[in-house]
Amino acid sequence: MPVHFSGFIKTVLFSILIGCCMLAYNTSAAQVTVHEPTLIDSTWEKPYAPFRIVGNVYYVGTYELASYLITTPKGHILINTGLSSSAEMIKRNIEALGFKIADVKILLTNQAHFDHMGGMADIQKMSYAKMMADAGDVAVIEDGGNSDYLFGGHGAIYQPLKVSRVLHDGDIISLGGMKLTLLHHPGHTKGSCSYLFTVHDAKRKYRVLIANMPTMLDDVKPEGMPRYPNVGKDFEYTYNAMPKLKFDIWLAAHASQFDLHKKHKPGDQYNPAAFVDRPGYNKLLNKLHADYLAKVKR
Ligand SMILES: [Zn+2]
Image 1 (cartoon, rainbow, N blue to C red):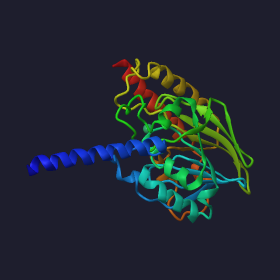
Image 2 (image 1 turned 30 degrees about the vertical axis):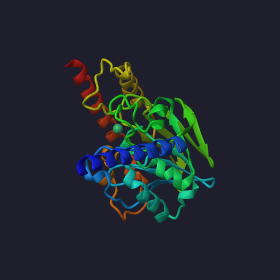
Image 3 (image 1 turned 90 degrees about the vertical axis):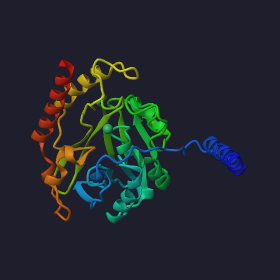
Image 4 (image 1 turned 180 degrees about the vertical axis):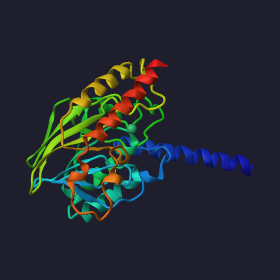
């Protein structure tokens, strides 16, 4: 009967499809089916004009999801990529500044969530750059978020990448005279981290911090979670470590966290002084810590 027949055909087609997917998965470990969470905020994808922040550090991200390009004579470092749909835009932003995506040699992230990792695999294909990551986030990056302690368990939510170098607190990432120190700031993810380094411009040198601000998401239980028993202890470590850092300029994974749009308007002249803002850093850290303590109390 036609109904059964079409059902049979569907079953056969489905089996072939599954077979092909598994074949694709087996032959190319990098390409898996991804279910990226639906967009939470339209500013996450909204294009934004790239600009020079300080010295050889450039903003190449979207309106809200920050990506940073650090250029050197030996190639470039890219930190964070936004959603998968933003990979092309980041490439165009890099080119608009006069640099080449093929010269990106090292890929880093502040945290292995999809809003900072979504475009990473595509950027890697364009550049052949090596992914380096904090030890705590390696497993999550390599399974596309499936082992994330909060969002995991539903398959890949971003395209996985192989991590070429595993980093620990205090490790140095060197390229073309730049030396970035990785600072392990766990809690938001197990391998959340910040980067601290010195840059120069014609006038002076600056200590720059690209910070992962320790936001505790709603579903986190500070007393411990099945896939992250030490989550509370890790957040406390981070709330204690971050206020002690010394820097001139701070930036973060989300533009709204460091008030990018109050400090810079597209077309503005080069003005690193706009990003010298210790009070803004302290204020946000204090707020996040207070939120955490209020949650522990409840
Ligand atoms: Zn996150």
